[in-house]
Length: 136
Length: 132
Image (cartoon, rainbow over all chains, first blue to last red; front, top):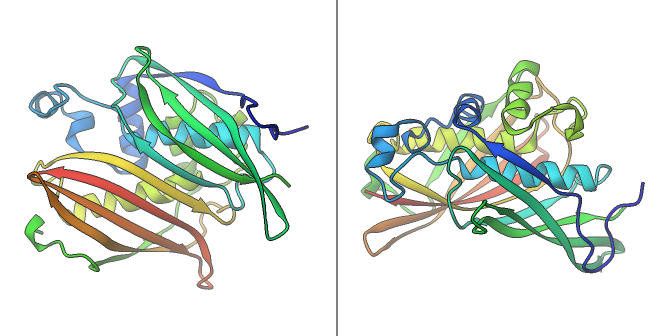
């Protein structure tokens, strides 16, 4: 199977619905019980006004996309560098996407740098950043 | 811990990590619609390591206990190899930066994950904003 390795090439992305059940399950699985994700009353008092999903959940989607697109190399040397730019609100369906932005050779190893994003239904980016992976 | 006690260079941990098969599956299930296409090959989702450490840091700083509003602003992670369930990993975190910006406290934690032999398996950096 060939992996995305041409400048401008889109990665195979996907859409995922972030339900409150998923957020709660993520809190239990990760151990992150920050009330901003779970407690409606507390969340109402914050700048967001309601519960929001964990940023790490969006990053996990990106991680999954990279492992799907680069199955033989992502788990050995893959690097992500991301910013959480807007909170995902439970019940939203987000789009997880990536594009090959740069190709380079470091120490004889061919690397691909991808621009990655998680986009909310209103078009706002919940996560932006880059992911770098070995080609082979 | 009081937020005023946070100082650059402060060390957190060590945090021993050992995920059972069930723990690893729960994390993958929580993030995915179907665990099978994830290609984790029966291994631990690498972000699970960092999520675990973040939960420990949150506890050590007292974010939940003191109901401090926080925003996870950024995250970096590099993984050197796959991690199997039941493998013993140790995480050591360092508070690399702590600054007050317009009443909010910005902190950057850097974390190293090593296996039983001391070999690095992953590194991460987490940027968190706290609004006391």
